Image (cartoon, rainbow, N blue to C red):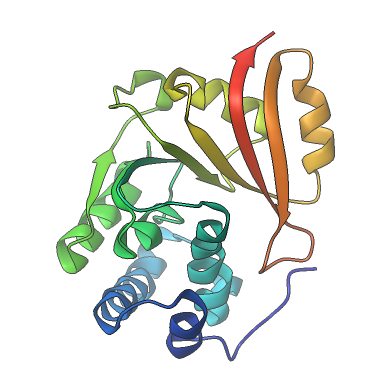
Length: 209
């Protein structure tokens, strides 16, 4: 079961993520915009709003613990929705982040966040099949699609050194098993810091069978 951490707020996030006051101020502005737009667009599950900083902000930021040199890279977040994890990481200074989201309404929100926070993001209001991106170092996706679909979606953007980090749930082993007939890849999993059933899946060397 996902743990409820109602006392985890901006101060606790700053302590865990070691971000500057300026970065934290922009993350607080992002959180405020999300709450303001939530009623209109249902950006995140309503039950998660009391734990926004734990369930979404820290859940997004935790991936940085598994990347040796995250700064200065080019990132792509597929099915970003309300901007998790891409906007959080962009505001934390990882580099240029491309957000891929087919929903026009959610892209309107993403543009409002970019304008309000100065986040270095590029928004692509497209399906993955229609995308044209520069070479991508890090691919992200959080609660977007089953693994087999994610691999189909992101494969065109894998270079030799590209890594992908996918937030996955308790069905990860079954999803991995389902991919073996179609894909070869190097994988490593890390326990989620925010959900005792969750995992962060790292994928390298993706290639078709």
